[in-house]
Length: 247
Image (cartoon, rainbow, N blue to C red; front, side):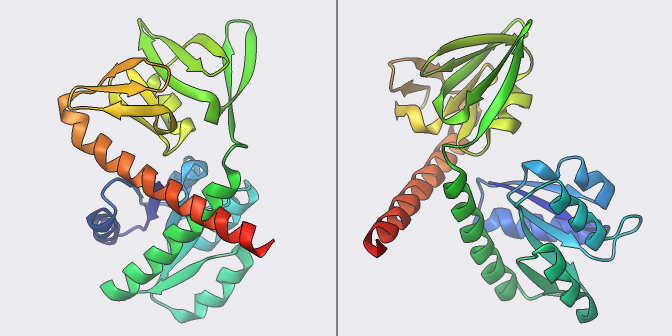
């Protein structure tokens, strides 16, 4: 899961980022110090912590722009003044934290935000796609069909359940688009957790039999994120079971 923390006080940003990664070490946390800076990347985040009183574009206007761009991110406002809280309803804010906030309160709000964000990801699963331009051809690819991708001499090859596609680009840029169900176990590869059959300290075996290198320095991160993926899948199946029972 990707989380943004936007506050013009770098100390506050660092404090929140550290607290998040203390409990959720596999989450990616990015710090921003202005609304303008955040808006450039806002679409990629599932949760956004946003200070209301920012220099330049304030937090409320930043939130309006985020919603205008159709982002469904879980918004949590940071503020020292309660008078701003009521405006939060205009931008569908999930919660707010009054500064200085206590750790217990922060972690409770964070837990609820993660659950809401994961529910949102579950609802969108199977519907997300990316557009890749390969020469004169532009193709729309369902993200869930991507098994893995590799790069060689700046040429990226995307392997899907329906075949392969080559184009010139960067794996790092592709990973940003694909989301949390993908990981880069080696600088030359991206892997979809959904197709992982087994792994060891040096390699990952996919359902189609392909063996992918697993860099030694990335092994711990891979295991952490893969376990998080398994937990998300179990939670998703449990929710589906409850919905079936209701019907």
